[in-house]
Image (cartoon, rainbow, N blue to C red; front, side):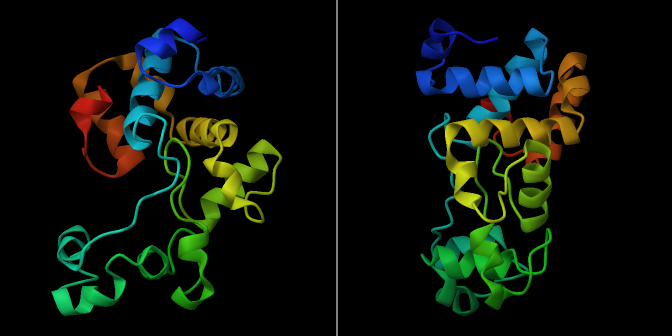
Length: 190
């Protein structure tokens, strides 16, 4: 369990004490290694537990680098530059349980929470596990309690406790790939 002194040392707001401890209890994130890895991964994914909604405001040039297959040219990226809603609807359409671009699911179920829960399917299944309708109330995932609980659900679903307990560089890299798809920010996560 975490306490106020520990969170202050990590520069994490005290409003996270109950959400983190409830998450640790509910998803049996119990060992110091598990809790440290969970906090480290969440810290990076949420910008220090401060950014609970995915930032999707990119320049056209940046879009061609982040999603080169979807935006092969600056011209193709221009309509989506600095347009978070349009961008989310395009890049998340037809994936992760989302419907087509026109449905608005991409933006409605964009990344939120401590591990950036994304997609209708994840919102649905996390909500079922937590006993709350996150499909009808996706904004709940951007509150500290549900940001932490959905991260715990995802952590449990991906079997990350075992990797945390291994404590090896390779295990931490595998954990990071399961969360982020790559090794983005690996040093910060550690």
